[in-house]
Length: 515
Image (cartoon, rainbow, N blue to C red; front, side, top):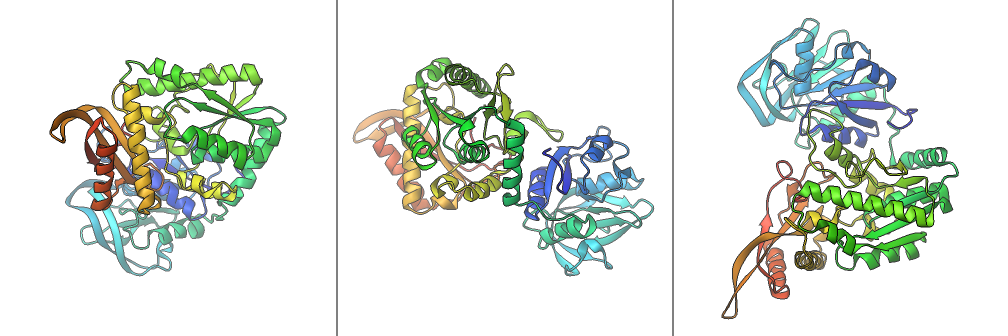
């Protein structure tokens, strides 16, 4: 956690798919929040001087033998608690109530009926739509708890302790489908917890500049720039804090999009007036990736090669005391399972992919931000709009969009297809309507016919998703005529391609990038 003179609410993650969404909704209310493991100790929570605590949903049943539970003493800290879905069941179970499998499970749209004058429902109508997702229900409330809302199938759709500031919701206020969910969360935060809504990107900017100056002092910083909004924002933020003590390093690992090296260098040097070390390292990266197909091994190799280059350039142009990176909160969570009963999804090259032998202290000023927050921060820093709104691009580059071994031919096919997709999206004005669109190339091939000749070529898969923070995503419903134009151009202009397919899996269960 960053220095704590601001009001903070923590979310304990019980493994629910909406844990990050709860965190983001709280931040949208102007309140800083952190996502912590469900078994965080009461002592740690006290040290954080929290104003409130939220228990997330989760896939477990609280009556199961190995169900995740809070540490003893969490509810004795004296701060308000809001349990959501599984979090409500944790509250009920902890205080001696009974949870059982529901005779009538509730999933999706449900009408909630509020009872009495509960502070949690202040200013809300007595009857509104909420979103349920549970197969268990409260059979018996603990003593000193009462129901403050019901649904058709649940007498305890919302509960509260009579004397303590403990609340539980069987539904999900964080999802857009719950009609007044955000207002309900604001009631908990502002009215019950007494939080001051001071979390804004302007305040974060001022605070972080101060923090960087305090931490770095007169040391020199090397900042890894990649061309994405995360690295550009990190670069601009650190430069604003320490000026000439910063030097950027831009490594072309040979896995970038078409025209990207020239574009990134021009922006860094001309538009942002940065000192830049440029390293053309395509051959050495491709050499190390030769005959490597496993996606985790690719990421590890790329992270290690970046680290070697950083050390070499520090000896040549330094020494540098710090390495600054554009690491975001989702990177940390996916790489390290930093919260909740989860497993590592992917090794992000700039998090778990870096070796511990790096001779730098790490400076990651965006480490607790989501992508949408970074974009707001980038705008405040005056970063050009075309960079702020550019689709995310992974640090390992096209290596994680090429399934199997990374070869020169597959790279060229992927790069050319990606350029066609971007051109068509911009031409049709769909580029700014979706989160991310790109090409995927693997080893599978399909028979095609060109004129009267048989051709055996690559299959290019188009992946288009809608998201706000990359933690969850849905596949984008691009117009058929746009998809047809993309397919026609790819198969006409890239001789090695005979078929174009479209990926329609959401996250979860898929991830956005294929590897």
